[in-house]
Image 1 (cartoon, rainbow, N blue to C red):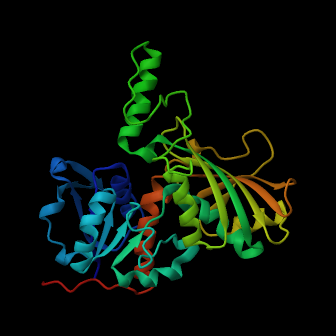
Image 2 (cartoon, helix red, strand yellow):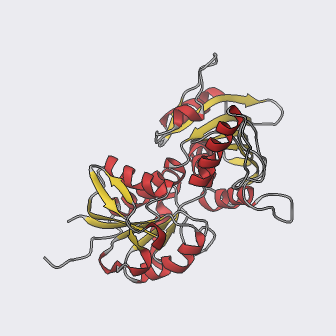
Image 3 (cartoon, rainbow, N blue to C red):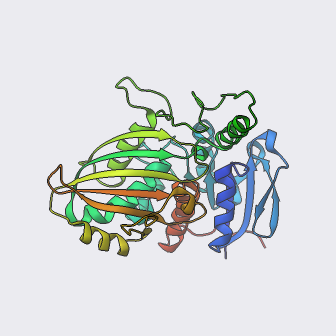
Length: 344
């Protein structure tokens, strides 16, 4: 018997990617339901060869749902995730709402799958921030080998991380530049076309942004609370794919060659690292792919036991939709949930 799956926020970028990935990976679903806000009722989304029409979240009966993939933002998740969990569904939430709750596991299956067993405390599992997910996939196998002390990361994050509005704004501004039209700035604080914005999410009192804070806190929760991490997060004029320049300081020596071999064997990682023009991965090549790509692995001579690497991933997939589906698969594979019995 298969599982009944609900996608909340099914008409958004991540929701559509969730539907695509469920079909691609042949997820054992008997029924998949697309849910959204009232204004999106009837909007059509694709699930393989099937067209689903979005239904209203606030009128839906979750009593038959086994797994709910939530991608509708923190406000919706705060209200609805506990209600859906109380109806007996496991909620896998893509927002930041539950990530820092001590009773909610924050999961990247390649990194800390064992922590998923704690989901029963609230019936909710959190998906990490998109920039954190790809980072910890790359850090985990290196940490296991040489124990990471400190990470300095600069991110180059695509506009799709800000949703459809972000993608639309980059497109509209680029078109306006080529047609000598007026450039409108709505979603981002400054022009994003042919520009960089060193500001993602709100500013905090210490000068860091909330996006940077998320990376610090989430890496500690997922990987190791002793790791020190500092981040600078930058929005770049790329439609899909987040990139990260990562400096890592270890407790033990680790050569670039050994790190390269470790990462080649690590789950979720794909090393493309030729020291020649084009011998690395860019966000363009990562779009539509599941792997966390790692390039430019080299030793950092400015610190003892240091490495530098370049990390790229499709933020809509591994950074959000794919990771959520992998969590659902993990629940099933570890026999942590069973499909509800339904009337014939």
